[in-house]
Length: 536
Image (tube, rainbow, N blue to C red; front, side, top):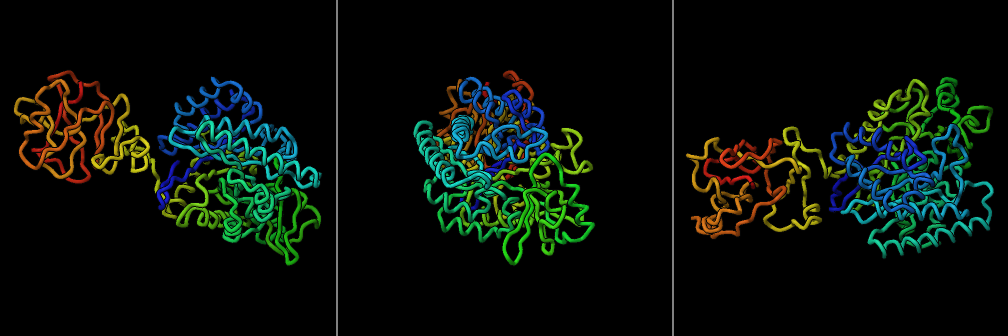
């Protein structure tokens, strides 16, 4: 989804495909068909953004075989999907029965991590839509905290410096700027946004920044405004933000709360648990550790790193950290200028939820993801962002695109006479018009061009029969204000400030033209307005 920020820039909203992980390219293509396209259709969108997770084998196949990359791009286009961001955190095996600590390997001190992220950057440069020049990749926040000594820390920073140089070279070669963001996570070397500032300022490159995951932010009890203001002061770029919510227990000492939390203690993913005390942040590596014994103080609220669905908070006595997400989003995109233009809903734990909460079918999963995106869309709308690509309203299904000011500039249609919006018909649709079923009583100008007798103009006035030698003469000699330049028929689509009607009927042969009513946004149709022959 694309949104227009009040400052005129475009903010992208996607959902991350690590919720249905695939290790191979064939698996990725299957997930587009089985999951991503159904989500798009449920939302009624003509195009949907997805944040692809590409395991190392899939990424390597794409970067070594240009035809495979072209095939993926074609498949995305065919299914109405687009990619501006990748999730580069998991390296492989994210669909395994037990992921836990494996997700942090290899880390940034290992050469495999640099090679994989370089591959991802090259792939993303080839997948970006034609009208997008910036892509983003989220990645491991250096390493898991254990066994990360001074030497490995230095190796990790060196690798990120090398990556920055490669991203510069890629931008020079392709014209596409790919940025990579470290994603702070509890238990890692970079656990909080504050931890990220020192290594990122040491690297000091605008293509290496931070990915703000709002679940991780909340789990560490960070205040979103304080955290984001500190990043701004340090000039650390927010490459992307993952919209997610953590599990929150207000009274963890109560038996009923412990029982509710135990339903989320599952064997596949690591669910780091934290509490804020007077002495600072305390935590365990997993929820089970916190629940058994006295490893974690329970006088204050607990938060667990469990990505719960955004639109459906857990049942009482638990809740989610959705308020933290809302606060972060306000600071990220609610100001005069967005701190980031890439937002990604990331709830990968649908199948790790308690059994009674898990989707049982693909359709139920698609419904849940669509509901999350709907909530995110509404939050952005509440902050003043405007949805730029609504699906055509009922009755206008033949509209392929509706171009606003920014789109018109992209397609070089931003001239003064192009109208507020430009509607582009689908290839098998054509413009229809109100008028007569019988051409005999129609006035002369009904079959030519007339743009001089009304304020504004209708889209069909841009259409004419180029084979008629009198079209230009009659348009130029029409009575009224000074003649304007007559425009030739557009092969596909037209511009106007009004609403268009479409027909999927075959273009009628000469002498059998049909004209139908089309509502107009600016003024109602009047009998004296001009019509034209549909282009033959």
